[in-house]
Image 1: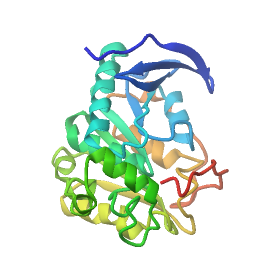
Image 2: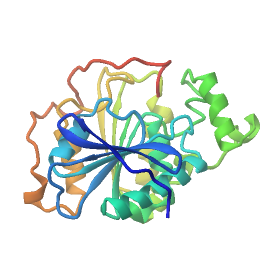
Image 3: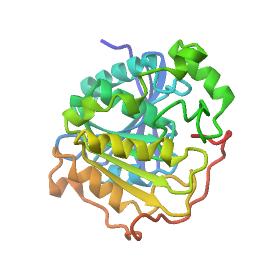
Length: 281
């Protein structure tokens, strides 16, 4: 059984929060006031608590919210191993649904996509936001993206790759979407159409074309005139509705779906930007 410490209990935005160490990594579980039928959950893979409108709406709807800190591992196999062990703890200790909603913001999409590709039958659906889909785009900067030399060095070390091996690497999510399509895992991708940090033609638009080409279900919400930030939608109903529609374990009474005002298609309301270290993809 995976080693996990007893949780430190606190309050987080009106909900009970558990902080514990799992497999040597800091982890967070936020509990809903009343769990929905089937005990559904959403897994934020990076940037816990940032642009969290969807997370809060789903907590209100009875979802658990989970996070484990595998920062600076960029979705490498060793990060996925930590995620596997966290998944075991969540199943055994919290009795959560065997299928999870994966939420990948920016570089967090590398974790979300790669874990879903590794574990497609344990993935309910994917919500990606301004996603990094090919690490050669970011942090590699091998196309139009400015990249991040510091992150590129850390990524190569995390994956155990040389410069030449990284440039030829065949394990990027964009090259391995077949398991998701075969398992009928649906994807929602939200992105800013003016994203210069992560050019959409190197990332989300390639994901869209390739996944549809494999027969996969993918819905996109483009935000005209918006760059890499802000993430998500401040009025998150379109995202929440997508997740609820694909979370078959929840019945309608348990969902208690919030009714925020809906934005016009493809647009989000302005939001304060968090401090950034470089482009923070």
